[in-house]
Every structure is written in structure tokens, then in C-alpha cells.
Image (spheres, rainbow, N blue to C red):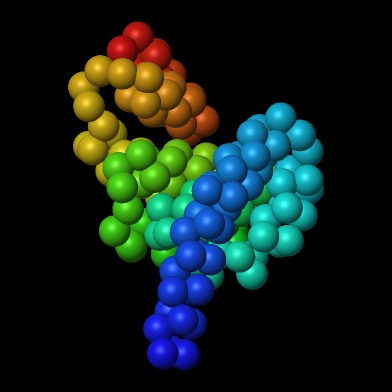
Length: 160
């Protein structure tokens, strides 16, 4: 009977924490793009103990925020390793695209053009032929080709 009560309590706690945790993650996502990165980093750190009850999707969203913060802090090398680890997992398409996008930018920032182009190609392969995500990736392709001095390729991707 005690075990049943404990299991019931844990289920109710997890269910009630779900919407609250979701709201907190959504707020951190908002802060991550509207405030200095240190603010979202502090909120992520504070929320860390609560992530044990998070869904895989929620934990991945938070990890993507951490990765963005690493890039903004200039720690692209550490971020690239974490992006690689994340990409080795099974991710929903939107999160996989976000990981590729972060990885491409981090790799470009440190001059690892081979990795940037590899991730760019992998991201483009899973994107639909039309849409905002593809446009953003084609913009990154144009930028990468410009970085490596391939003006014609850069213009070609910019025109797509």
C-alpha cells in the first residue's frame, strides 16, 4: 500500500511539474534570444535538478540552449564536441536541424570548414525542398563559400 501511495505521489508530481517545467523552458528559450546569454545560462543552471523529470524533447531543447550559449561565450570547440554527441542521438527533425545549424556556425567560427560543410550537407539532406529552414541553410551555405573564397558558389547559393 505504501509503495502504491509513493508511486501515485511520484506520478502526480511528475504530471504537475510537466506544464511548469515546459513553461520554464519556453521562458528560457525566449530569454536566450532577447537577453544576454548569461541570463539564460543562469536559469538553465538553476533548472538543472528539475531536468531529471523532463522529457527527452525538453532535455534536448535545454541542451540546444546550452550549446548556443557556449557559442555566444566563444567556446566553439567545446560546443562542437557536444553538437557531435547530440547528433549521434535520435532526434526529432526540428531539433536535428537546430543542432546542425549550431554546429555549422561553431565550426565556421573556428575555421573547421570541412566539418561545417559536412554538417551543412547533412542538414540540407533532411530539409524539405522549400521553406524557411531550407532558406536559412542555403544562406549559411552562401556564407561558408564566401568564407573560403568561393565567390561564384557563394552567389549561386545566395540566388537559391
